[in-house]
Length: 521
Image (cartoon, rainbow, N blue to C red):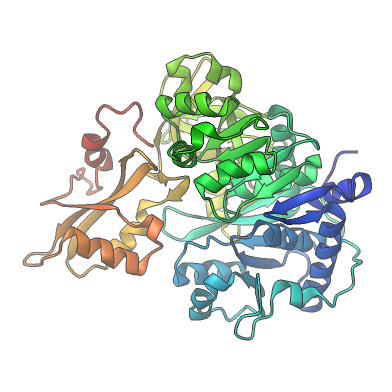
């Protein structure tokens, strides 16, 4: 019988391979039996404080193991874990935790000062991931006295399992609710297409607040394979770990590939165990892929996807990489796991023919259930409603189809992707316009050889006001997560606008993207 929930996957592994290592962090390991025992204790501790079905628990952590334990414990209660981006500011964290009404928050010691400066009236219990911190017990201390047995709440495949937050075009983050069915579908398709099973080891250096980082943790539950997790990405250390932990598969963002290639000892490393390197979040240059081929001697696979589709929508397969066609390498690949794509005129909502650029719509059983307590946004994302196959989801990305392959052309919503991070200009512009010297401003993405795209501010100053590029950047960094802040600022006389007054961002971007193969990173 197919697994219906993430807990089903865990219990299946406990029954068949209880003493196999499920998760490794450095020298620390957890077997499937130990994962089950710890999650039972955490579930009992959460239940004792009143967390139940449909409740939310929040984690602000770099630690993969503690995150997956909390996620599974919540699932056993019928509740939902909310991993929060640890790169956010106190006010941004405050909004997300309060929006989810999470009574429980686990945070790393490094983030405790940020958490304690936030207003979190709904949080009844704060625990520290690693050790006790100023009155907050460590996670292990908190649940250590609890019973090791727990009877899981009955759940259905389409119940919520995970809630990840993504900034919206209004500047406020939206809670993306993913189901057990959708996340299990991701595990099934990844296991099949990546040829990953219980014999393999997945190297996971991606953060747990990203859908990719989380779905890679869940792959272990589905397949019985092992995850070797890394809370920090150190290129040289990660290269050494491939041989040390016999990593067979890994998923990285292109900037990580570039950083690994720049390690002086990269060419002398031992990568004999490595079978496949998947990458996504932004495209990668032909030069980088060619160098990676020469060093790693493994298969390469590109992933295009979104949090809203539980991760992957298309794969550019190893055979596509091996064919040597430069045009094909610029594509995002073909739909996978039963997904279907349409290219739709974003205004008329009419389907467009092959080769014509429009908005990418995705139908799959991995599509999000809803935006948390935001029916308007959910309805807008599903203009034709939900159906048995998941419904057609408006991705907000622009592109076209050619010979069954998807080519990403632009982002309908002006989203910037920098180093795999989604950055919405409206959110950044809201902060920019608070600068006392700024009369008008716009945020755009410009090419960056390392991150794919970098954030740039185009600023019109108030009459008589003075501000330098450094002034603006320092102001932004004091009021917003640093990865969202502009890396450069252009002081201009005026911003181009259409007759209705809307800023023409394509006109602003055009000089920087001239000569590039696509209009986004």
